[in-house]
Length: 379
Image (cartoon, rainbow, N blue to C red; front, side, top):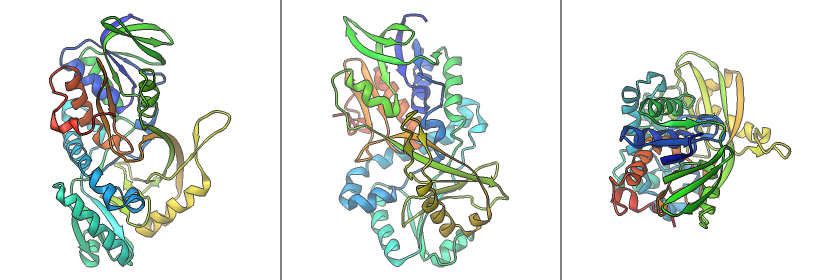
C-alpha cells in the first residue's frame, strides 16, 4: 500500500464514499480505507427510507422541547433529499431508484392525530411542507391504508432509494475521479507526527495531511484516539422484506403509534423497518434478528396497510447503526486537520449532502462558522 495521501477517508459507507468523491473531483489526492467491503455495514443494510419529518419515536419519548432542539437538523435532511434527486444523473446511476412521492404518518386514534398536529407545527416553523389530512382526504390519497385510519400527516418530498447500490455508485465515481480505495484494511490508530497525521492500519502506516472520520458507529472509537469522548452510540436494529407483489404502496409510510417505516421497492417487495432492536450475538459479535421484536413491527405494518398481511416474509436481517441520544449530527473539525462526518439514525437521507459540506470544509472551501454546518460542530 502506498504510504502517503493528501486526504485519508476512514469508512467505506455512504458518507465515506460520498466524501471521497467530493474530494477527488475537486482534484485532491484521496485514499479511502475500509475495514471490510464497501457498503457492508449500516449504509447497505438500512431500509432505504428518505426522511424529512421529525421522527415519531423520540418525539413521543422526549417531547416537544427535544423536537425544537432537533428541528434545525431538518434543513440538512431536506437538502439531502434535493441531492438524492440529482445523484442518478450526476453519478450515472439510474439503479439508485430514487423516488420521492411523499411520506405519510398514519394515525388510528384521535390522540395520535393531536400529536401529529403538534409535531407538524414545529416542522412547519422550519419551513418543511407538512400537511395534516383528515380521514377522507388521507384515504383518497392512499386508498391502501386501513379503513379505521382517522387521519395523518403528509410530507410530499419524502421517499426512498436503493441502499444496496448507493455507496457503490459513489465509490465508482470517486475512483473515476482519481481516488484510491483500500478494502479489508482496518484503521487501528491515529496520531499527529509533525505536520502530518499517521494513520495506522492493518496494512501499515499511512501519512496524511488531513483525515476524514466517516466511520459511522465506529466514529467514536476513531475520535477517542484523539482524546475525545463523543456521544456516539452503536445500536443493532432489524429490517424485514416480503415477497414481490403488484404495486400497492407508492409512499413512505409511518405509524403515529410506534416505530414503523414501510415502503415498496421498484421490484415489488415491501420493506418493513422503523428501528426495532436486534441483538448482538455473544459468540460472534454480529447483529442478529430478535424474534420477539419482529412480531410487533409486522403488526404495525399490517395495521397501517392491511394488504401486507397476505404477503410472505422472505427475509429479516439485522445491522448495527449509529446513533446519539439527541439525534443531532456531529459535523466539523475535531482536531487540527481531522474532520468528522457523522449523521445519526437518518444518515442515509442526509449523507450525500453532509458529505459535501464536510469535504468542502476539509478543502478550505467552507468556513467553520458557515451557518449550515456551525450549529452541528462536535463538542
